[in-house]
Image (cartoon, rainbow, N blue to C red; front, side, top):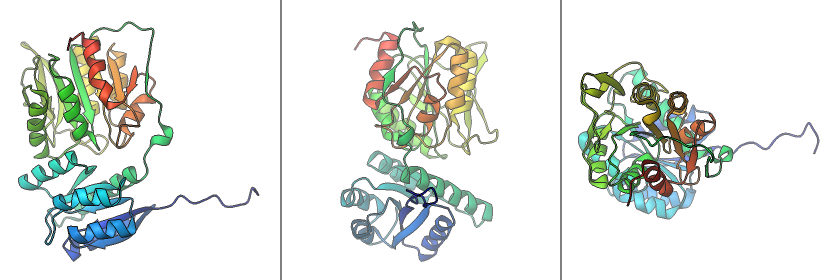
Length: 351
Protein backbone atom coordinates (compact mmCIF):
# COMPACT_ATOMS: atom_id res chain seq x y z
CA UNK A 1 0.00 0.00 0.00
CA UNK A 2 1.30 3.44 -0.83
CA UNK A 3 2.48 5.57 2.09
CA UNK A 4 0.13 8.22 0.77
CA UNK A 5 -2.94 5.95 0.81
CA UNK A 6 -5.59 7.18 3.24
CA UNK A 7 -6.12 5.26 6.44
CA UNK A 8 -9.46 3.57 6.94
CA UNK A 9 -11.73 5.92 8.87
CA UNK A 10 -13.12 4.75 12.19
CA UNK A 11 -16.88 4.32 11.68
CA UNK A 12 -19.06 6.68 13.72
CA UNK A 13 -21.06 5.51 16.71
CA UNK A 14 -24.66 5.23 15.54
CA UNK A 15 -27.28 6.38 18.06
CA UNK A 16 -31.05 5.94 18.22
CA UNK A 17 -32.74 8.65 20.33
CA UNK A 18 -36.05 7.69 21.98
CA UNK A 19 -38.24 10.31 23.68
CA UNK A 20 -41.91 11.21 23.37
CA UNK A 21 -41.15 14.95 23.32
CA UNK A 22 -40.10 16.25 19.90
CA UNK A 23 -38.40 19.20 21.64
CA UNK A 24 -36.34 16.95 23.91
CA UNK A 25 -35.46 14.63 21.02
CA UNK A 26 -34.25 17.65 19.09
CA UNK A 27 -32.13 18.91 21.99
CA UNK A 28 -30.53 15.52 22.54
CA UNK A 29 -29.87 15.07 18.83
CA UNK A 30 -28.35 18.53 18.39
CA UNK A 31 -26.06 17.96 21.36
CA UNK A 32 -24.87 14.58 20.12
CA UNK A 33 -24.43 15.71 16.51
CA UNK A 34 -21.98 18.36 17.71
CA UNK A 35 -19.76 15.65 19.21
CA UNK A 36 -17.10 14.12 16.94
CA UNK A 37 -17.53 10.47 16.05
CA UNK A 38 -21.27 10.29 16.80
CA UNK A 39 -23.96 9.86 14.14
CA UNK A 40 -27.73 9.93 14.70
CA UNK A 41 -29.08 6.72 13.20
CA UNK A 42 -32.73 7.46 13.97
CA UNK A 43 -35.36 8.64 16.40
CA UNK A 44 -38.49 7.23 18.00
CA UNK A 45 -41.35 8.69 20.05
CA UNK A 46 -42.24 5.66 22.16
CA UNK A 47 -40.96 2.29 23.26
CA UNK A 48 -42.83 0.29 20.65
CA UNK A 49 -41.33 2.36 17.85
CA UNK A 50 -37.93 2.09 19.53
CA UNK A 51 -38.03 -1.72 19.40
CA UNK A 52 -38.91 -1.66 15.70
CA UNK A 53 -36.25 0.95 14.90
CA UNK A 54 -33.63 -0.95 16.87
CA UNK A 55 -34.29 -4.08 14.85
CA UNK A 56 -34.28 -2.12 11.57
CA UNK A 57 -31.37 0.26 12.15
CA UNK A 58 -29.17 -1.84 14.48
CA UNK A 59 -27.65 1.18 16.26
CA UNK A 60 -24.64 0.98 18.55
CA UNK A 61 -26.32 2.94 21.35
CA UNK A 62 -29.95 3.69 22.25
CA UNK A 63 -30.72 6.75 24.40
CA UNK A 64 -33.99 5.77 26.06
CA UNK A 65 -36.57 7.83 27.96
CA UNK A 66 -38.65 6.12 30.65
CA UNK A 67 -42.04 7.87 30.61
CA UNK A 68 -43.65 7.53 27.18
CA UNK A 69 -47.07 6.66 25.75
CA UNK A 70 -47.89 3.39 23.94
CA UNK A 71 -44.93 1.60 25.57
CA UNK A 72 -42.74 2.99 28.34
CA UNK A 73 -38.97 2.66 28.47
CA UNK A 74 -38.85 -0.04 31.14
CA UNK A 75 -41.19 -2.27 29.13
CA UNK A 76 -39.24 -1.60 25.95
CA UNK A 77 -35.80 -2.25 27.46
CA UNK A 78 -35.73 -6.09 27.29
CA UNK A 79 -37.34 -6.00 23.84
CA UNK A 80 -34.67 -3.58 22.58
CA UNK A 81 -31.90 -5.78 23.96
CA UNK A 82 -33.49 -8.82 22.32
CA UNK A 83 -34.00 -7.03 19.00
CA UNK A 84 -30.30 -6.22 18.70
CA UNK A 85 -28.10 -8.17 21.14
CA UNK A 86 -25.01 -6.15 22.01
CA UNK A 87 -26.68 -2.76 21.71
CA UNK A 88 -25.84 -0.39 24.58
CA UNK A 89 -28.73 1.40 26.29
CA UNK A 90 -28.43 4.69 28.18
CA UNK A 91 -31.45 5.79 30.20
CA UNK A 92 -32.12 9.54 29.93
CA UNK A 93 -34.92 10.65 32.22
CA UNK A 94 -35.90 13.43 34.60
CA UNK A 95 -34.42 13.00 38.06
CA UNK A 96 -37.26 12.18 40.42
CA UNK A 97 -37.51 9.65 43.24
CA UNK A 98 -39.82 7.48 41.12
CA UNK A 99 -37.61 7.69 38.04
CA UNK A 100 -34.52 7.02 40.15
CA UNK A 101 -36.10 3.79 41.40
CA UNK A 102 -37.12 2.72 37.88
CA UNK A 103 -33.76 3.73 36.40
CA UNK A 104 -31.82 1.77 38.99
CA UNK A 105 -34.02 -1.23 38.23
CA UNK A 106 -33.28 -0.71 34.52
CA UNK A 107 -29.53 -0.77 35.28
CA UNK A 108 -29.94 -4.19 36.89
CA UNK A 109 -32.05 -5.41 33.93
CA UNK A 110 -29.59 -4.67 31.15
CA UNK A 111 -29.35 -0.89 30.71
CA UNK A 112 -25.73 0.24 30.76
CA UNK A 113 -25.86 3.76 32.20
CA UNK A 114 -28.06 6.68 33.17
CA UNK A 115 -28.00 10.43 32.50
CA UNK A 116 -30.47 12.75 34.27
CA UNK A 117 -32.18 15.23 31.98
CA UNK A 118 -31.61 18.87 32.96
CA UNK A 119 -34.53 20.29 34.93
CA UNK A 120 -33.54 23.91 34.36
CA UNK A 121 -33.27 26.09 31.31
CA UNK A 122 -29.70 27.04 32.26
CA UNK A 123 -27.33 26.86 29.28
CA UNK A 124 -24.52 25.60 31.55
CA UNK A 125 -26.71 22.76 32.85
CA UNK A 126 -27.71 21.81 29.29
CA UNK A 127 -24.06 21.83 28.23
CA UNK A 128 -23.13 19.59 31.15
CA UNK A 129 -25.92 17.19 30.14
CA UNK A 130 -24.74 17.05 26.53
CA UNK A 131 -21.11 16.52 27.58
CA UNK A 132 -22.01 13.72 30.00
CA UNK A 133 -24.30 12.00 27.50
CA UNK A 134 -21.83 12.28 24.63
CA UNK A 135 -18.97 10.94 26.76
CA UNK A 136 -21.06 7.96 27.83
CA UNK A 137 -22.18 7.28 24.27
CA UNK A 138 -18.54 7.37 23.18
CA UNK A 139 -17.34 5.15 26.02
CA UNK A 140 -20.05 2.56 25.41
CA UNK A 141 -19.86 2.77 21.63
CA UNK A 142 -16.13 2.25 21.60
CA UNK A 143 -15.08 -0.19 24.28
CA UNK A 144 -11.55 0.05 25.59
CA UNK A 145 -10.83 -3.67 25.39
CA UNK A 146 -8.16 -3.24 22.73
CA UNK A 147 -5.89 -2.04 25.54
CA UNK A 148 -7.07 -4.70 27.98
CA UNK A 149 -4.76 -6.92 29.98
CA UNK A 150 -5.83 -10.55 30.42
CA UNK A 151 -6.99 -11.81 33.80
CA UNK A 152 -3.96 -12.32 36.01
CA UNK A 153 -2.79 -12.59 39.61
CA UNK A 154 0.64 -11.38 40.74
CA UNK A 155 2.62 -14.05 42.56
CA UNK A 156 5.57 -14.20 44.91
CA UNK A 157 4.56 -11.47 47.35
CA UNK A 158 3.19 -12.07 50.85
CA UNK A 159 0.54 -9.46 51.61
CA UNK A 160 -1.27 -8.45 54.76
CA UNK A 161 -4.90 -9.52 55.16
CA UNK A 162 -7.17 -6.51 54.56
CA UNK A 163 -9.12 -4.93 57.40
CA UNK A 164 -11.37 -2.75 55.22
CA UNK A 165 -12.56 -2.78 51.59
CA UNK A 166 -12.94 0.34 49.46
CA UNK A 167 -14.83 -0.21 46.20
CA UNK A 168 -15.19 2.16 43.25
CA UNK A 169 -17.36 1.81 40.16
CA UNK A 170 -19.27 3.64 37.45
CA UNK A 171 -20.78 2.52 34.13
CA UNK A 172 -22.10 -1.03 34.44
CA UNK A 173 -21.23 -1.35 38.12
CA UNK A 174 -24.67 -1.53 39.83
CA UNK A 175 -25.40 -5.14 38.78
CA UNK A 176 -21.74 -6.02 39.38
CA UNK A 177 -22.03 -4.63 42.91
CA UNK A 178 -25.13 -6.70 43.63
CA UNK A 179 -23.27 -9.83 42.54
CA UNK A 180 -20.16 -8.91 44.54
CA UNK A 181 -22.06 -8.07 47.73
CA UNK A 182 -23.86 -11.39 47.50
CA UNK A 183 -20.50 -13.16 47.13
CA UNK A 184 -19.10 -11.31 50.17
CA UNK A 185 -21.75 -12.60 52.57
CA UNK A 186 -20.06 -13.47 55.86
CA UNK A 187 -16.98 -11.31 55.21
CA UNK A 188 -17.05 -9.16 58.33
CA UNK A 189 -15.12 -6.12 57.09
CA UNK A 190 -16.27 -2.53 56.74
CA UNK A 191 -17.00 -1.73 53.09
CA UNK A 192 -16.66 1.78 51.68
CA UNK A 193 -18.27 2.32 48.27
CA UNK A 194 -18.16 5.19 45.82
CA UNK A 195 -20.37 4.70 42.77
CA UNK A 196 -20.79 7.51 40.25
CA UNK A 197 -24.47 8.33 40.81
CA UNK A 198 -26.58 11.42 41.46
CA UNK A 199 -28.43 12.14 44.70
CA UNK A 200 -31.47 9.91 45.13
CA UNK A 201 -29.91 6.97 43.34
CA UNK A 202 -27.37 6.25 46.06
CA UNK A 203 -30.06 5.83 48.73
CA UNK A 204 -31.80 3.22 46.60
CA UNK A 205 -28.53 1.53 45.67
CA UNK A 206 -27.66 1.14 49.35
CA UNK A 207 -31.04 -0.50 49.98
CA UNK A 208 -30.49 -2.95 47.12
CA UNK A 209 -27.00 -3.81 48.34
CA UNK A 210 -28.25 -4.38 51.89
CA UNK A 211 -30.71 -6.96 50.57
CA UNK A 212 -28.15 -8.59 48.26
CA UNK A 213 -25.38 -8.81 50.82
CA UNK A 214 -27.36 -9.44 53.98
CA UNK A 215 -25.50 -6.69 55.81
CA UNK A 216 -26.46 -3.15 56.88
CA UNK A 217 -25.72 -0.79 54.00
CA UNK A 218 -26.63 2.90 54.01
CA UNK A 219 -25.39 6.19 52.64
CA UNK A 220 -22.51 7.45 54.75
CA UNK A 221 -23.25 10.24 57.24
CA UNK A 222 -20.85 12.90 58.46
CA UNK A 223 -19.01 11.73 61.57
CA UNK A 224 -20.44 8.20 61.45
CA UNK A 225 -18.12 5.54 62.87
CA UNK A 226 -16.81 2.95 60.43
CA UNK A 227 -17.37 -0.47 61.98
CA UNK A 228 -17.02 -4.10 60.82
CA UNK A 229 -19.96 -5.73 59.10
CA UNK A 230 -21.41 -2.52 57.66
CA UNK A 231 -21.23 -0.94 54.21
CA UNK A 232 -21.21 2.81 53.54
CA UNK A 233 -22.20 4.31 50.17
CA UNK A 234 -21.00 7.78 49.17
CA UNK A 235 -24.15 9.94 48.86
CA UNK A 236 -24.79 11.59 45.51
CA UNK A 237 -23.38 15.11 45.40
CA UNK A 238 -20.75 14.49 48.12
CA UNK A 239 -17.24 13.11 48.18
CA UNK A 240 -17.02 10.50 50.94
CA UNK A 241 -13.66 10.31 52.70
CA UNK A 242 -12.26 8.74 55.86
CA UNK A 243 -11.22 10.72 58.92
CA UNK A 244 -10.19 9.91 62.46
CA UNK A 245 -11.95 10.73 65.73
CA UNK A 246 -11.31 9.71 69.33
CA UNK A 247 -13.61 6.73 68.67
CA UNK A 248 -11.62 5.63 65.60
CA UNK A 249 -12.15 5.93 61.80
CA UNK A 250 -15.22 7.94 60.75
CA UNK A 251 -16.99 9.00 57.59
CA UNK A 252 -16.32 12.53 56.36
CA UNK A 253 -18.40 14.19 53.64
CA UNK A 254 -17.53 17.26 51.62
CA UNK A 255 -18.59 19.15 48.53
CA UNK A 256 -15.13 19.95 47.26
CA UNK A 257 -14.91 20.42 43.48
CA UNK A 258 -15.69 17.34 41.36
CA UNK A 259 -12.80 15.11 40.34
CA UNK A 260 -12.97 13.47 36.93
CA UNK A 261 -16.21 15.48 36.53
CA UNK A 262 -17.67 13.39 39.37
CA UNK A 263 -18.88 14.04 42.89
CA UNK A 264 -18.73 11.53 44.52
CA UNK A 265 -15.39 10.44 43.08
CA UNK A 266 -13.36 7.37 43.95
CA UNK A 267 -9.93 8.99 44.26
CA UNK A 268 -10.74 11.14 47.34
CA UNK A 269 -12.12 8.09 49.14
CA UNK A 270 -9.04 5.99 48.35
CA UNK A 271 -6.52 8.72 49.23
CA UNK A 272 -8.09 9.35 52.62
CA UNK A 273 -8.67 5.67 53.40
CA UNK A 274 -5.03 4.93 52.58
CA UNK A 275 -3.91 7.57 55.08
CA UNK A 276 -6.05 6.06 57.84
CA UNK A 277 -5.85 2.31 57.16
CA UNK A 278 -2.45 1.96 55.45
CA UNK A 279 -1.57 -1.69 54.81
CA UNK A 280 -5.00 -2.78 56.08
CA UNK A 281 -6.82 -1.39 53.03
CA UNK A 282 -7.84 -3.30 49.89
CA UNK A 283 -9.16 -1.25 46.96
CA UNK A 284 -11.44 -2.83 44.35
CA UNK A 285 -12.09 -1.05 41.04
CA UNK A 286 -15.08 -2.26 39.03
CA UNK A 287 -16.33 -1.49 35.53
CA UNK A 288 -16.64 2.19 34.65
CA UNK A 289 -15.67 4.84 32.11
CA UNK A 290 -12.77 7.22 32.68
CA UNK A 291 -9.80 6.85 35.01
CA UNK A 292 -11.20 7.68 38.46
CA UNK A 293 -9.57 5.42 41.04
CA UNK A 294 -6.23 4.94 39.27
CA UNK A 295 -4.39 7.64 41.25
CA UNK A 296 -6.15 6.42 44.38
CA UNK A 297 -4.80 2.91 43.83
CA UNK A 298 -1.28 4.34 43.67
CA UNK A 299 -1.91 6.13 46.97
CA UNK A 300 -3.21 2.88 48.49
CA UNK A 301 -0.17 0.86 47.50
CA UNK A 302 2.20 3.66 48.51
CA UNK A 303 0.86 3.15 52.04
CA UNK A 304 1.22 -0.62 51.87
CA UNK A 305 -2.33 -1.47 50.84
CA UNK A 306 -3.60 -3.72 48.05
CA UNK A 307 -5.55 -3.17 44.81
CA UNK A 308 -7.50 -5.50 42.54
CA UNK A 309 -9.60 -4.70 39.47
CA UNK A 310 -12.32 -6.26 37.34
CA UNK A 311 -11.11 -7.66 34.04
CA UNK A 312 -12.05 -6.39 30.59
CA UNK A 313 -14.09 -9.40 29.54
CA UNK A 314 -16.66 -8.92 32.32
CA UNK A 315 -16.59 -5.09 32.37
CA UNK A 316 -19.14 -3.03 30.46
CA UNK A 317 -16.41 -0.40 29.99
CA UNK A 318 -12.80 -1.19 30.88
CA UNK A 319 -11.98 2.44 31.63
CA UNK A 320 -11.53 2.75 35.39
CA UNK A 321 -10.18 -0.76 35.98
CA UNK A 322 -7.99 -0.49 32.88
CA UNK A 323 -6.50 2.83 34.02
CA UNK A 324 -5.80 1.37 37.46
CA UNK A 325 -4.23 -1.74 35.90
CA UNK A 326 -1.91 0.38 33.77
CA UNK A 327 -0.43 2.05 36.85
CA UNK A 328 1.41 -1.20 37.54
CA UNK A 329 0.35 -1.38 41.20
CA UNK A 330 -2.58 -3.78 40.81
CA UNK A 331 -2.02 -7.27 42.20
CA UNK A 332 -4.90 -9.01 40.39
CA UNK A 333 -7.07 -8.49 37.30
CA UNK A 334 -10.07 -10.76 37.77
CA UNK A 335 -13.41 -11.67 36.19
CA UNK A 336 -16.31 -10.46 38.29
CA UNK A 337 -17.26 -13.95 39.43
CA UNK A 338 -13.80 -14.48 40.96
CA UNK A 339 -13.46 -11.20 42.86
CA UNK A 340 -15.56 -12.30 45.84
CA UNK A 341 -13.57 -15.51 46.34
CA UNK A 342 -10.29 -13.63 45.96
CA UNK A 343 -11.30 -11.22 48.71
CA UNK A 344 -12.51 -14.06 50.92
CA UNK A 345 -9.19 -15.83 50.51
CA UNK A 346 -7.29 -12.64 51.25
CA UNK A 347 -9.29 -12.10 54.42
CA UNK A 348 -9.14 -15.75 55.42
CA UNK A 349 -12.93 -16.04 55.70
CA UNK A 350 -14.29 -19.58 55.35
CA UNK A 351 -17.37 -20.31 53.34
